[in-house]
Image (cartoon, rainbow, N blue to C red):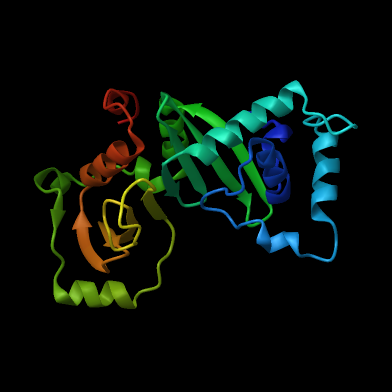
Length: 238
């Protein structure tokens, strides 16, 4: 992403939880809970408040500014979601009352700084194309002849023994309104890990430990379906 970044889009976990409290929310799905810092000897929430004042999200008296209200609304929308998709370091949330946009949190620095955004579906797709080489990958000529195909036992053994190297694309889908809430239940949770084995695109169903070769078309169908992208976007990015 090469666009100019707004420093007010970057927050610590403490800052986000402090703002989320204004909506009576207490969980940011996919991120560490408040217990990781609430019992610390220092006072992280006081420091977070000072940082929010410096960013003009709060006034010196602790009132919410106009910019702060916008951020709180974004956090509230993220918190209320019943569906989340994780793409490596990005968590996307979906809103039932606004299907044209997604609210996302990017982990800019692990367990330290996060970026909070609201994007159109078209812009979110561009973020994936620009940020993940496997999404932008050109399909092999033979990939037009299959969607998925089984690997030989030798290939599976070699893949299991090898150390994964970039590019790797982790894709997780959470449906919080589906039951039973177990990682082995596909309607509730699915997790695919995509990577290259030579020139072959491999998918690992993490929960079931199932490996298979997949085509680029199958990968993109999974992404488009789960991200709820309109298929008209294919012509613009494909």
